[in-house]
Length: 214
Image 1: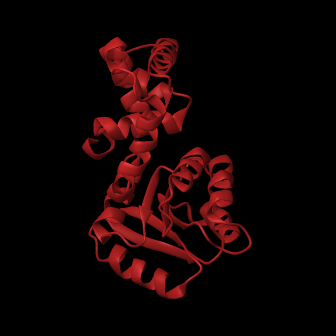
Image 2: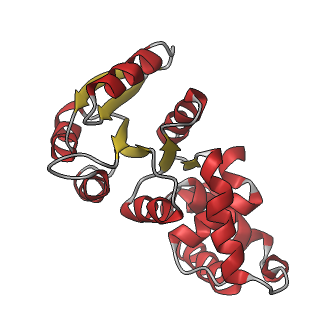
């Protein structure tokens, strides 16, 4: 079972999320909190698989909570649930360690897909925001010719696994490579594609359809 902690300061939202999640055969809600600080605390106590985290909360907002969770509960996966669709929010949450980003106004299937992807150690972005994030990547690289032609298949494979959410050690095991070789392929691929960090890798992954195929 995927154990889920709900973090949202609106009781009616938490109630609706609980009904949705508890109706799934592979999921259960193990707790609810209404502040980011409580989410960090309960992550230690309840040890959920996934935290569904609102951005706007009192005491400690979702972005701050995501950063704190990445430091204190690195095995817990964070799915951000928000009404804000700006690319800046996506970038900030991914940079803080969230592996999923879902809009409250989207279909419930988006959240369920994100939770299941997070539980598998993968990343997931709401389909409603993928075009916006990909557009920022395209704008940054236009009008150059497709840089992908210069990147080896192995470098792309490493970048794909990074975008999905695997660590260098996990990628090394999956591809039967040394960790050092994975790091070299990652660095070469990022340099050839002019990728500045994890957010850029995710943007490139969106263009390739990797996050929804994972």
